[in-house]
Amino acid sequence: MSLANAVNKVIFGEILKGLALTFGHLFHKPITQQYPHTKPKLPDGYRGIMSLLRYDDGTERCVGCALCEIACPSGVIKVVSAEEPDRPLNRYAKTYTFDVTRCVFCGFCVDACPVDALAMTKEFEWASENKRTLFLDKEQLLANGDRCFPVRGKKPAYLGSIEGDWYLDKVKNKHYPTHAETD
Ligand code: SF4
Ligand code: SF4
Image (tube, rainbow, N blue to C red; front, side, top):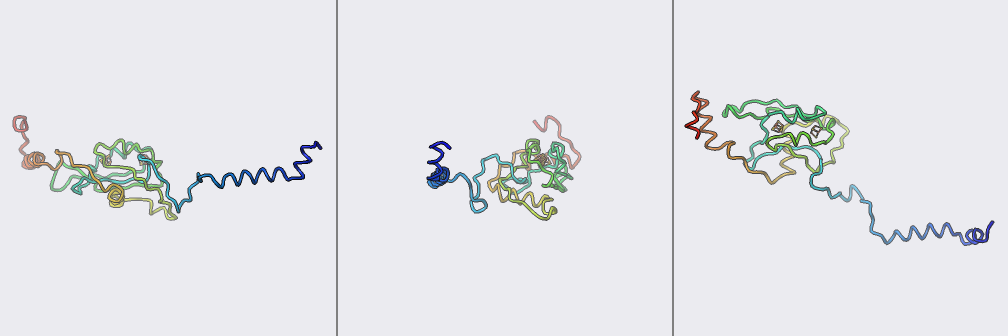
């Protein structure tokens, strides 16, 4: 045994080194978070649970085109669309279902939506012992949107506008406007 090793053994060198390392960390800012007591600060663009959005007048954005359903690689979304009873050319999602258990949170559906009706929230604490609670319907998705995106966008002028109503009136009465009338 060398002299250095013998001295190390006598003064418990390795133990002292370990203690020095431990005490050194006592004065550092912790890098771990005490979740769930401390919630993480999530970045904008975080892909959490899905939501359906409304316009500022409370009407639903979704027009039931089902492009999100086509874009989804996991078969998560099912849309059944219908015509609005009092606005024959306007469509909406009669039913919209979303199976969270199959979602891979890729965001393709959000990108595919032509009217920005879908958005991913920053909510992630949806663990459940009952898979049925993770099969969301339209009302639940809209509630997610109402809760997470209280500030809504303006409705485009062509939706529900005076011009749109005039055009629909003509269509309903089977008088299709000519180019001259619409110019
Ligand atoms: S985030 Fe991806 S997997 Fe989930 S519903 Fe949208 S397209 Fe499908
Ligand atoms: S959420 Fe968007 S893409 Fe999906 S059906 Fe509604 S309007 Fe179409």
